[in-house]
Length: 173
Image (cartoon, rainbow, N blue to C red; front, side, top):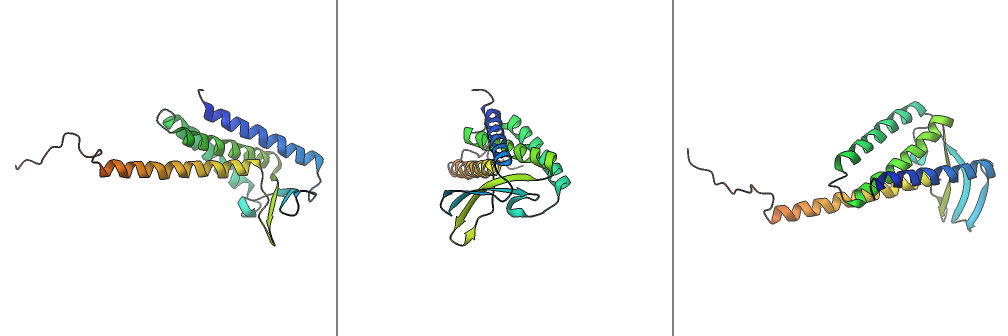
């Protein structure tokens, strides 16, 4: 399927948009719905910062950075789409969809709708959304591709495949 990585981004964007709209329309900020006891809750929350609530109130900064990142991802997809492994392109598609999803919230409202909350005993993991999940999964796939590519490169070097293919010996001058 051609351009499947862009379809991955569109799927993430649609899923993110629909889930955020459900939270916005069905819950008031701070409302919680227990899914699995106190371990997993749907909690209506707004974040004016980045991951884990850092850099609060930096809307313009996030908009500029996201535009640069989105353009960079699109450029990289186009430059490597014929030679890249599928999981790299899927990872890039996930990051692209997630970045655009959170970008649209920041551009329109100045904040991002978060709602997935996990608690591990007394520790509450920062609340996040579908776009954040897609970005994390996408980055994981990109890292896996990087590690596997490095391993393949190391094997090629050990087998002498990257040496000068003509095996020229230096001639005395």
